[in-house]
Image 1: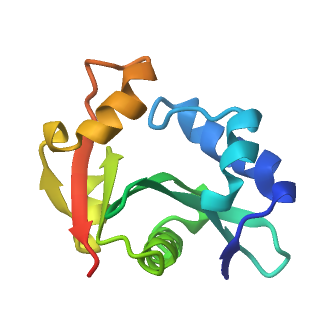
Image 2: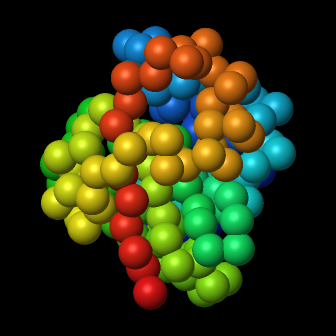
Length: 151
């Protein structure tokens, strides 16, 4: 089941995201960051309401949002949780009038399967100057930029 995240979910979301960050495939998130951005998050929960996945949608401009912090418990990989999370985030921002969503990823094949197309990161100047400039990988980022029209 997919639901909006709440403040009580922040520590579990952090644990899940940072388990990927420990393997250098995601950036870590501080608890403070998660509390500040909890409204952007959707979570995938099991029958016991235990978080097994998370994803956020961050608005950048009047027609552009980023799908970010997508993390799924290893036991739930390739079972549709990631796709459901991304789709829930897309529906959330679409309801606000967003026309395009993008992501920076190492798993571009996953995003390609759900309708995203690869683009040059230079086409995302808002992202680069708002967030990427603070990343330890900047300017040597090796993530792949993907985008999807959601009109």
